[in-house]
Length: 368
Ligand code: CO
Image 1 (cartoon, rainbow, N blue to C red):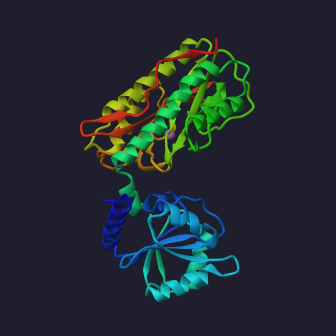
Image 2 (tube, rainbow, N blue to C red; image 1 turned 135 degrees about the horizontal axis):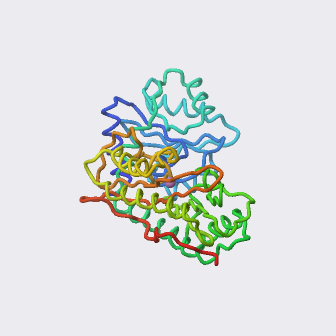
Image 3 (cartoon, helix red, strand yellow; image 1 turned 90 degrees about the horizontal axis):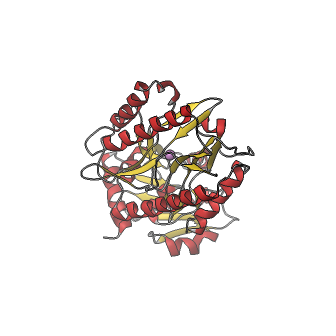
C-alpha cells in the first residue's frame, strides 16, 4: 500500500480515539511524514488539513503550488497570493467543508502568531496539541525508514574515519567542524542534522558546546558530536578522539564511558522500559565513582528529527518495541579539565538491538 495512505489511515484511527475533527499541520517533520512535502516554516501561512471525514487538503501561498503538486501525496491545494488574507481564505474553506465548529489538533511547533491568528479569525475552533498522537506513530520506524537512517549513519561513520586522519594540533575547532560538514555533504548529506559539536580540551566538558576558535593542542581529548541528514533522515554520533597521548586519568574515564555505553547496548531489547537502559548505564558510572559527572539522560529517539520519541531517561516508562530507533550516549564531564561522550544509534530488533554506527569505540590516538 502507498506509504502516505497507510500513515493517513493510522492517524485517522488515532483521531477517532481522541474524538478529533481535524489535524492541522504546519511546515515540520510531521508535515513531511504525512504528505512527502518538505519546506521550512515562514511568515506565509502554509497548512495541510486532515479532516476526520473527507479528503485532506493544503492551504498554501501561490509560490509553493508547483512544488506541492510535485512532492505531496495530497491533491487538493487551495492557494492564496500575496495580496490576499490567508486567514479569511482558511475561514471560508472551513465553512464550505463544515469544519468551523470543530476540535482540531495542531502541530506542536506551529508558530504562536499563526495559531493566534487562526483562533481569532475562526472563533469556534477548539485546539489541542498533536504531539503524542503522531509521535506514537512516528516512533516505530518502517524498514524503509530504518534503511535511510542506516545510510545517514554510515555517512557520519565515514566522516569520523576521515577526521582521524585530518585532525592535528594547531587546528581550531571551527576549522574541524567546517571539514566535517564538507565531508558529510560530499557523501550525499543534505546538511548537518544539528549544529556540529567540536569540543576540545576543557570545552569537551560542556555537553552542548558547539565549536569555537579554540586551538586544539596535543594531549587533549576532542569530542566530535554531529549528524547528517539523508533524504530527511537524521544520524547522530559522538566519538571522543585523543589528540596525542592521554594521561592515566583520561584513559580511566574514557574506558568507563565506553563500558557504560556497551552496557546500554546490551540492555536494549523489546519489552523492557526505556528507563531500564538509563538505569543500567548510570549505575555502572555511579559504581565507578563518576555518577555526579554524568549530567544528562542516556539517549533520545531519532528519525526525521534529531530528538524525538522515545527518550531514554530515568523516568521514561516507554516500553521498547522493534522498530524504535534511539541513541545511547553516556558521558562524563569534568569541568575545567575534559569530557568524554560516546554515542551510537541503535534500532530495536526482535531479539535485542542493532548498532547503526560501526566505527571503533576503542581509545584512539590521532594527530601524531
Ligand atoms: Co545525540
